[in-house]
Picture 1: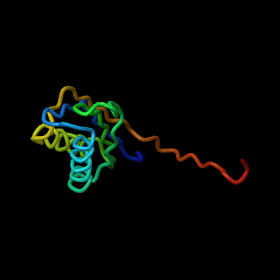
Picture 2 (picture 1 turned 180 degrees about the vertical axis):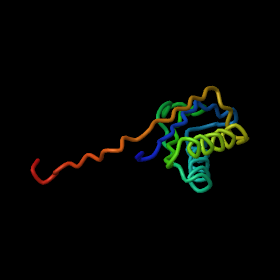
Picture 3 (picture 1 turned 135 degrees about the vertical axis):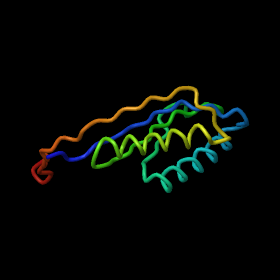
Picture 4 (picture 1 turned 90 degrees about the horizontal axis):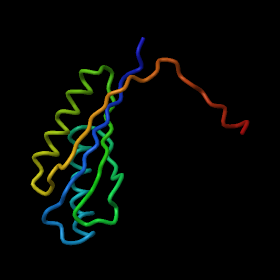
Length: 110
């Protein structure tokens, strides 16, 4: 019996109209909130923190079957490509099965 699937979408973004790090942060915050609300995913900026016209984000999606996760990943990708504030320079996707056997750690004995 499976325990579900995790999908990751990683995108390198260009902000052609960004004029400062403050502008970049505002646009990224808006994008992250919209993706999380509409698609139930987690979003993190993972690279290009000091560049005001570039950002690399990774989006995580969890679901019970690979097809559902793939469908959600496609919707997230469409949202990225249609956002007028960003240009997607590069995108990668990956889906992995989660192992069925849970691992329990006894944190009290550490």
